[in-house]
Image (cartoon, rainbow, N blue to C red; front, side, top):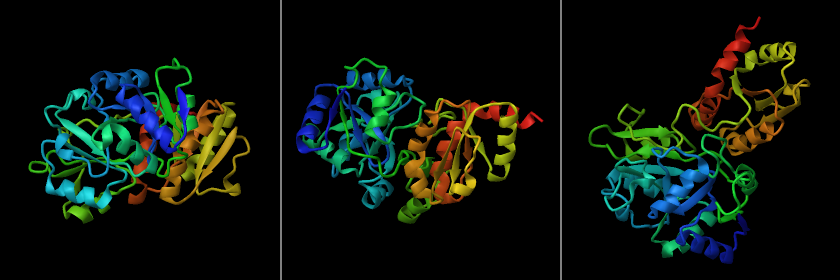
Length: 347
């Protein structure tokens, strides 16, 4: 994996690598993506292989600002156009009916496609250089499937350190991702029958979207398209993660201490007063939703490095502004629910 800077020469080199069918990891404002030419099925297949991603799990295609969306989608509804004008470039992905000539490798075999124009200057520059701004870069998060997403170049290097060096051709180091959690995903492919549907919450809220389009944003239904990050278990550290309400935290800690189980703690808005002396590490995140999201994945990775038996994460506020954060934490904790039940039942 060649580490590239974020200067113009590096961006041009990265675009050339993508055009050759190779993989390049690059920064976006949400998380780092593992990119490939979206119209090259073998290159997209290399993403799935590197990540260990199920073949039916679609990826998001990143496009340049002012890209010809008619190339990618059969139809751009009026509501989608309004959202593009309001939020692109930015952390919003739109699900649209896929044009028939676009390979279904990016859609997990579905007739839809996820499109997004990122706002990170490096990503925008890369998209402008790639195929002279007329291409699309398929780019799920640059991590092994189901694991904590990367928000820095170092996270990407750590994540893929065990792979052969030539699997990922280049990595653009563009600093830390500003947003810190993945984009909001909105289904615009079934407006006439179902309406606008929120498939994955993120930085841009349902209220903001409703205000732009003048329609209620609905919850996912059984017929909703499959999208990135929507599985019950996702975004998980290797350490079992337990989501704990603030008023239950001390009780759970006492039980872990009694069982001589090592643990780490992540608090929300805590300071020295919430420090846990028996924890291998206590990590504090801010009480502001956007600042918390920015530091969430880096914090999970930091705590994971301690190799404790249990990771305790204090449940953040449940307000709408926290919906994206709580979605990620709920999925990260999904495979550890039995561990939490066992601790609670251990008197």
